[in-house]
Each structure stands twice: as structure tokens, then as C-alpha cells.
Length: 363
View 1 (tube, rainbow, N blue to C red):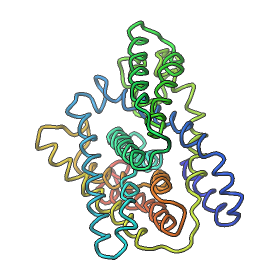
View 2: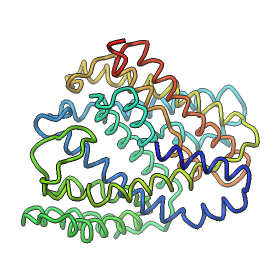
View 3: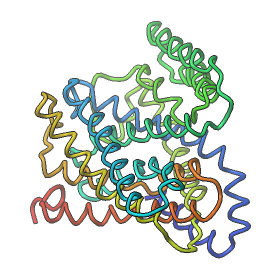
């Protein structure tokens, strides 16, 4: 919910005192988007890692691969719907580059919506891994198309070195998370940056190597203080700074000036709220037929709710819009579409009530 509060503040600020807002957002953009959010993705990766241990809801590769396949299906569905909608008008050449905006999933807000449906809703790990995969793939594609820096081949080598260092630390049973963070994490961050990719994903390949207890305490269930494994200690140290980063992320990215919608607005909405959920469900159906498994205690009606929840692009979609389009009216109309994908929250909760899932199961 904290990212939504930041987004609301940004929206009001940008439309009342625009000059001061945009000066503030530009000053903090790099620190928040490229550094602070690195730790958010790291904590989300931590939850996925624990969900894949024996007893976790994503245990065995047949379950952990399903949200990855669903993510690809959702992206394909969003892109097809986005392109198809643009063919109805004459602005395809201008708006074509904006398809990643429709693919984005606001992980923090989507998980908040899912927890509103059920505090320990068993489909949340599936939603989280789906969101991480979608945003990771979209980030890579966006940054390859519109790199934030000159691309250097040494970047990929540095990421490989970072992973190798993390493997070595794990092999020598280093129990503190700090060496993983300061050696592997820093090297990975610079490796991503030199590769021309947004370094926000730098800790994702590092976190799985942190020693962790062979148990899944539950999704977003705080581990008791007695647990001293590196992964739990990492969460203790960074959970509050990450909340601050999420609040600032909402402020920095959600300052949208309301100056009129357009074709870009409608294209993003149709692609995100219709094409993406249909793509997710089609991919899941095909994957299950091929032999993959639904998560424990998750039924098809849960999949419908998750697919709709994953359509919420919100602040991440705004972030992708800024990367894809230069300042101007096209960026504004696409950003309005990204902002309006928050309507997916109401659709998801309404669908959950209709299908009687989560907290609505006993009503």
C-alpha cells in the first residue's frame, strides 16, 4: 500500500506544483529507480527462493516453471492486443514502441491486492514469480532498445564474476549476507550497468546463493529472530529501507500530468486488462496439458484472479513509459493508460468475490 500512497502524493503534487515536483523527481530518479529498487527485487527474490524449498508452494520444477511460462504468455497476449488495437487507427508508427508498458506488472501493488483477497492467499508466490519474470524480461527488452549507457562487453563478464564469487562464498559457507552483497552484489550492479541494462535486477542472480534454512516459513511471514541464516538476516536488515524505497518509487514515477488521453491510453488499457490476462490463462492451460503443475492449494478460479491481478502495471508501467518515449504528448497519454491499469485491482477483487476465492470463499 505504501507505493500507492507515494503515487497519490506524486499525482497531486505534479498537478498542483508541477515545477517543484519534476525537479524533485529528476534529482531522486537514479537513486530510487536504479539503486533503491534493487533491494526490493532482492527481497521479492528471497520470497520466491523460500517458496521453492521442499514443502514450499512452488516446490519441484513443474510448479516453479509454470509462472515463468505464464509470464511469457501474458507478455505475448499484451503485445498482440496492443498491436491489434493500434491497427484500428493511424498512430501505430508513433506508438508501436510502447508495448512494454502494457506488459508491466506492479509487483508491490499487485501483491497488496492479492493479500487483500486473502492475507495468506496460496496463489501469491505464483503471482510474485510471474511479476518478477514479466518485469525482468520487459526491463531487458526496454534497456536493449533504449540503453541507459554505452554497452560494454565487459559488463556480462562482470556479472559472471559476481555469480562466481557468490558461488565461492556459498561453498565456503560464509554465513553473513554482507560479503554476498558487497562483493557479488556490487560487481553484478556494475555489470548490469556496463551492459546497458537497468541494474535494478542486479541482486536477483545473487540472492539464491545466500545460505537459507531448508524450510518455507510462509509467504511474507516474518521469520522468528532465532533464525540466523543469511537470507533471513538480509530480510531483517533491508525490509524497512525497502519500504522507504517503495514510497519514493511511487513519488518519483507517478507524477502524471492530466492533459488529455488518446489512442495510447486506450491501447495500454486494452492490452493490459484484456490481452495480458487472456495470454496468461492460455499459457497456463497449455503448460498444464504439457505436464506442468498448478501450485499447491491453487485452483483454476484462483488462476483467473491472479491473471487479472497481474494486469496492474501502475508505477512499473509508468517507469517503462518514461524509458520508451521522450517528453511530449504521446508520453502523457501512454502514462495515463499506465496509471489507469490500477482499475485491474477492482476487477480482480470483484472477480474473487464472484468466484468465491480467498477471503470470499466462506461468504
